[in-house]
Length: 385
Ligand code: NZQ
Ligand code: ZN
Image (cartoon, rainbow, N blue to C red; front, side):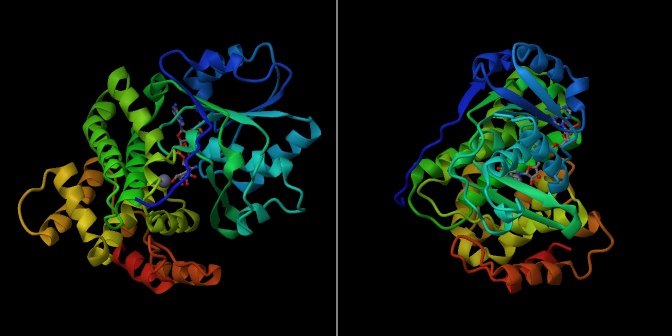
């Protein structure tokens, strides 16, 4: 196991009917900006629960943060923060609203002229404006980590940011919120969380047995609850396992002491930026090709995953590793997620070259050994056409 430091300051408030508890988490004298998305919270009762809990606070609302939170929209929210002397942010939504709120937390204290530089110049926020979250969609883990991904439609860019000052102070996780989530978003959440585990696990053996088993157990739990959650999102038990698995998949714990890959996400983000494909679906497109292309470097972990998660017991390391990739792709497909770029767009020619060009311009070398060059990304994306 590699040396590591681990600190996660986010307080998790988990369980049935917990949204009302935000009242005692936000400082009494705060001037609150409540941020949300396109309006799902107004139909499913979450808005009412939150506003009731905030009835003793000075609150301004900002709705309309789109999926893949858009820089232009967030700049309007930043103006409200400055004009209204906001001191506390409350995100009520999925990864997009929470990520947008993290950007605002950073931008509110940023001293440069152009907040977009936070993304392009990789500014690490040491202390942002404080914020909490009410999670409405299990998927990204953003509710308990310090990263965010922001989109700019004007330039077709989607870039990541973060810093130790961007953990939520608290996050409320009430699994009952999933009852209103459309199936498309439920399967996205399962796929995204599953791939988060893969990114931190599917590297090379490093004898971090506990980390491996944490990772495997999250994947096993997701596989087990997926059909139940899809069949009946009102069933509380699988909903609770699903929600906690998504949080645990990307709250920093399983990445400590082990190498991380993240190349699937980096290529996937480009597919969202170029075509608007849902985040999770881009991962299902890229992951099978990525693992096939990097087979030699990853086959030991692939075989271990095959054995322990998919019960593949027959054959050589190569056989098990290959079967594990097939199982993974089949899992995504059984969820109803297409795994080829051509399933989403007919305009895919040239995509691999464009992504390689962008990675070259940014000087990116990806993967757990920083050895995945732009020309490798080009080949992987082509395999995924
Ligand atoms: O906008 P509203 O009307 O609220 O509808 C949303 C949205 O259309 C809807 N929804 C959310 N909760 C609901 C609900 N509908 C009914 N009932 C509910 N309870 O779901 C749609 C998708 O929401 P969104 O927040 O975009 O989804 P998700 O949580 O998957 O977030 C995706 C974003 O997170 C980023 C992605 O790149 C993408 O931009 N990620 C953030 C990460 C992080 N911060 O750690 C890591 C991830 O890898 C990912 O990159
Ligand atoms: Zn993701």
